[in-house]
Structures are given as C-alpha cells and as structure tokens.
Image (cartoon, rainbow, N blue to C red; front, side, top):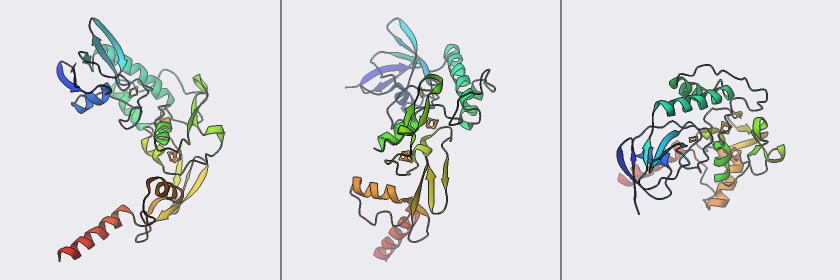
Length: 251
Ligand code: SF4
Ligand code: SF4
Ligand code: FES
C-alpha cells in the first residue's frame, strides 16, 4: 500500500512505517539532522530536523526523523518558526559541543555563532551532544558495549557498570557514526585503543595495512560464518588479487 503526502506542496509517495525525514530526503528535500542515520532506529534526540506537519486543520511542529508518515498530511520543511526553533536547539547543542566542526557549521547557517550559555559544568566527554548514534550503532551490531548513564544534566555516554565492556570488539563503528568526532580513539600501525581497552590489529598479509581488530575478526567469522582467511588481505590487496586472477583468465 502506498501513502500520498505533500512536502512543500509537492505530492510524494511513501510506504506505511516510513520516517518523514527519510521520505523527504529520498525526494530531494533538504532537512538538517544530527542524531539520525537511516540505518539506525530514530530517537528524535537533537531536534534540528523540526518541520511543520498539517493534518486536517491542525498544524504542529515535530521532529521529522521519528515521525511516521501518514496519508494526506502536508509538510513544510522551512518557515520562520521552524528556523527559530532549529536555531534555539542548535544554540543548546553548540553550548554542549563548542569545538565540534559539524555543530559549528550548522549553527552558523542558522545565525548562531556563540551560545548565550555554557560551558557545561559536568562534561566527561567533551563535545558529546548525546545523540546516541554510538550507542545505537554498537547495539545494532550486537555488541551493546555502550550505554546512557545518569539523567538530566548528569546524563552521559559511557560503559555499562563503568568498566571496559567484555563485548567491545574495537570495531570503531561508534567513532565513525559520531557527528562531533568526540570519542577518543588511538590507532597505531598495530593496535587500537578505545573505551579503556587495547586491541591488536590483523595486518594485511601483502601490505601490512590494519584490516580489522583480532577480536572483531573472531566475532565476525563466528557470527557471519565467514571463511578463516576472509580478513587475510585488505580491500585494496583483495581487489588487486582479483584483477590479477581475472587478467590471467582473460589472457
Ligand atoms: S568499538 Fe566497541 S563500543 Fe565502539 S561500536 Fe565497536 S564494539 Fe561498540
Ligand atoms: S559520543 Fe558522539 S555519537 Fe555518541 S552520543 Fe556523543 S556525540 Fe553522539
Ligand atoms: S535528526 Fe531528528 S531529532 Fe535529530
């Protein structure tokens, strides 16, 4: 079944269960976002994706990422009211993450360069905006090595029971989804240190590039049923080996 809705007066189709932000983007409408990733469950944490949704005679401001589309709604993605609310939310986020490039850039687009409040008194992970992307990505991969601790102004991202998590494999996915680059990670040619633990890398057998951590390799081979030699080569060397084999067949 297909739903019809209007975004900025243009009719678009969607499927039941689709999130409004994803539908809008698929149809070329631009809405800012910080906490959302299409591959992760939406939680509406950053509130910069605010839009106006009209259903019948009622119009309300709502976060687009965790709003399930409905048949017949009309959506406005920008207006002075939306702009004002996004700017206010960005000011709060900038106070949390004054050094984060992504926040500074987006805030500047909304005319915010210096938050009127902050710095935070309690901020164990500087520049974290509590978007929970890291927690959701880690959970989605089945590791559940990160969690939300505390409430209100003591809320923070951390390790369950405040100690290095046995389930962490050092994959670095939390780092790659973090919009503010605030998760401390240290990579050397042979090891990665993250969340209080050090992991040895598997090195490419051809060029010695780090491929994956040993612990993540063991986990991936076990859970995805991959062959034991799957991570012996880095992607570039794998491709080169495939091209060589292909050339040998052709010639
Ligand atoms: S590095 Fe550890 S905490 Fe980060 S996503 Fe991977 S398993 Fe989770
Ligand atoms: S560490 Fe990064 S990804 Fe995790 S909640 Fe903070 S800002 Fe978001
Ligand atoms: S992207 Fe919608 S609330 Fe963050």
